Every structure is written in structure tokens, then in C-alpha cells.
Image (cartoon, rainbow, N blue to C red; front, side, top):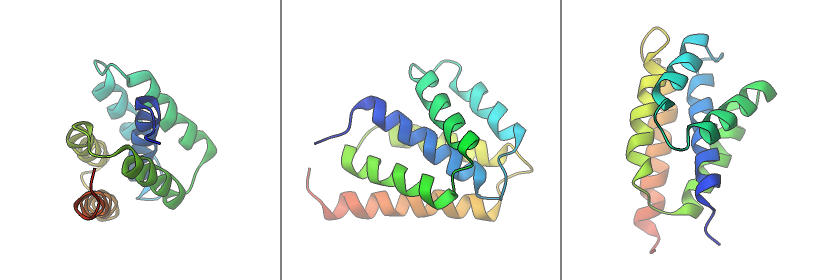
Amino acid sequence: MKPSKEKLYDALGELIYAVAKADGLVQESEASKLQEILQNHPWAQQIQWSFNYEKNRDTSLEESYTKALETCKDYGPSEEYEHLFDILYQIAKASDGLDRAEAKVIVRFKMALKEHFMNNEF
């Protein structure tokens, strides 16, 4: 069964957290940038809640990444992903520029989704 839109936005918050955590610590500048970016997003509260939940739990990067990837795979193709990658790069750049570890998480996620959608029919 396809996850709800709410679950998708939870996953986006988890992935944003994973990227922010990639350099070892979620920086205040990254959290602030997320709030700034989400100001006018209709699901801002859901995404922000998910990000904060993972941050407060100090969830591992891999756990957060894996949960987000599985939800996105189950959800299927979405126009939201293009906007998501833009957000991910903005968050990653918010603290001293794009870190190699952050870029690696973003590219890895993008490639995993692309491979999944190319190999599965919807």
C-alpha cells in the first residue's frame, strides 16, 4: 500500500536530518535554514516536526536515511523530490558550504531512488 502524503513528508524531514547529520553534528545554521526554507511550504509543520524528532533522538544517519529511502520507494515517483533535492543542497551549504559527506548522502539517495524507479514499473 502506498504511504500517505503525511508519511512522505515525515520521510523528507528524516532525509533532511540525515544530510544535516552527515558531517557529524546538526548545526544551528542548518536548522535555521530549514525553518527559513519551509516558511511558505504547505507541509512545513510536518517536515519540521520529523526533522526535530530525529534530531532530538540523535538518530543515526543510516537509520534516518534508510527510513526515508524506503518510504520514498514505497510512495513512488513524486514531483516533491525535485524540490527536496534543492532543499537538501541549501541545508548542506548553510554551514560552511557543501561538505563532502553531505554531498555523498544526497547523491547516494538520488541514485538509489533513480535506480529503484527505473527498475520498477508503477
